Amino acid sequence: MDLSFTPEQEAFRAEARAWLEANVPSVSRGTGPLPSLDTPEGFEAHRAWERLMFENRWSVVSWPQRYGGRGLGVMEWLVFEEEYWRSGAPLRVGQNGIFLLAPTLLEFGTPEQRERFLPPMASAEEVWCQGWSEPDAGSDLAGIRSRADRRGSDGWVLNGQKTWCSRGAYADWLFGLFRSDPDTERHRGLTYFLVPMDAPGVTVRPIAQLDGEPGFAEVFFDDVEVPVDQVLGEPGQGWEVAMATAGSERGLNLRSPARYTVAANRLVELWSEVASRDRDLAAMHADAVASAWIDAEAYRLATYAAATRLASGGKAGSEASMNKIFWSETDLAIHATALALLGAEAELLSEEGRPGDWMDGYLFSLAGPIYAGTNEIQRNVVAERVLGLPR
Image 1 (cartoon, helix red, strand yellow):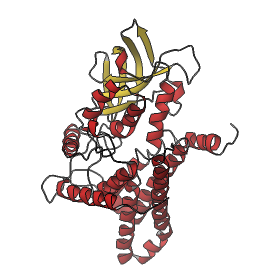
Image 2 (cartoon, one colour):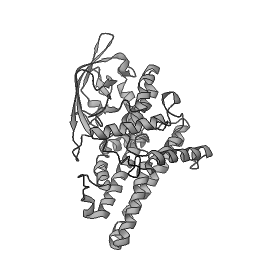
Image 3 (tube, rainbow, N blue to C red):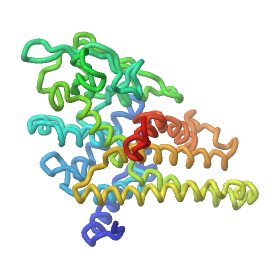
Image 4 (tube, rainbow, N blue to C red):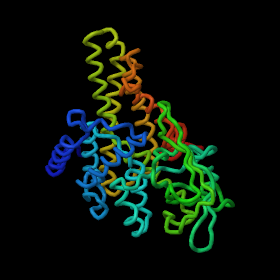
């Protein structure tokens, strides 16, 4: 693994840093911070930010140019992510589409599907949510019951319920799995659909998070008609297609290491501030701070090793499950340590009644070991498919 950057990559970093410094919404420019993306006004503000990035070809730097990207490699994408998180730029409202669905479309989609869906995804003209989990099928994705019935040669009819759909309260489209052949084995007979959220028969019920904002939604399907060209992959191939998406979700696409190295550096700064006024408290948590920083840096190095392997034609495979366990537990450790340093101060609310950055991050980090497949399930995957242990 070569951790040095080429002159071209360093020039790209400088260009990205300059553009972000000039355009990221900020208090000093009177343009930020943006409202929470889990509110109607915040969602649209983040959509506008994505549109600005797209117009300047920063929203999807590793995509082919014909779809709005720059045609760069995974290493350049990681460089951009480092600069993006360093700048304090807004969360990506379109992450489900650009980080999860897009790689799957590029692998399994038809040329017509790529032309239709990728450009408006890159510009956030169309924002996507994920329709996988159901009330009785969360991490057990093979247990889904929502049905897809073929109607003639023109399309399908969907019925069922999805839950915990991130961004589902405001999204324009949903990608989801439905059981198209109920008589086959659990992992077979599934088909992957692309469904507009305003289709007749689709009902969206927002689900409030701990902060009261609707970050999720339940989505109900009652005789929803979907044409055949909105099937991704072949009918019955849904499990294979979904596992490609899951590899992106658990691997380096959804959670780049910059997210954690920036947070770990902030944690070190917080520790220094605490040490200046309470050396005993700082000493009590010094090992936890060091451990969190080391883990974040280890994840960065492991990700660059994985990127080197991918750039050489390799695949992430089941190792993505190890990634998912590591980044989710690192995120939780960073924020839990910050709260321990802050003590009761961490519970203070802003004038708008919102928690501080560390508390907000901690509450979100609690979900990390659950979403993208619970860590208990991921440990089973690692044991069986990476270590070769018996079931």
